[in-house]
Length: 72
Image (cartoon, rainbow, N blue to C red; front, side):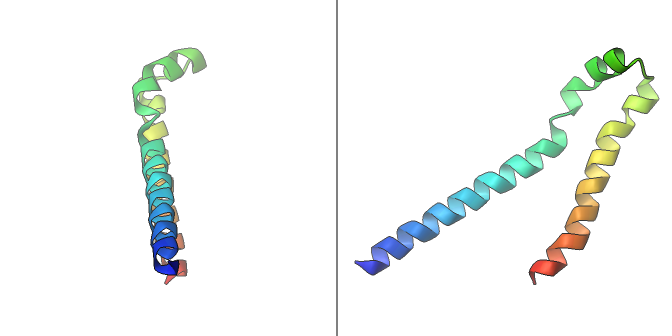
């Protein structure tokens, strides 16, 4: 009976981690459809608003570079 409980716990843990991973990765791309609206509301140029996804993805990559080795 404990193997069934352990299996259920492992599945729920994997599901939780998969959802968290999906949300974290999707968060990097959520700003892209909103770039035109952000540029208009902040009164910034297209070039300046283009830095938003660049900096977001660069920050994500740096975070992976620095944090993933800590898990090993």
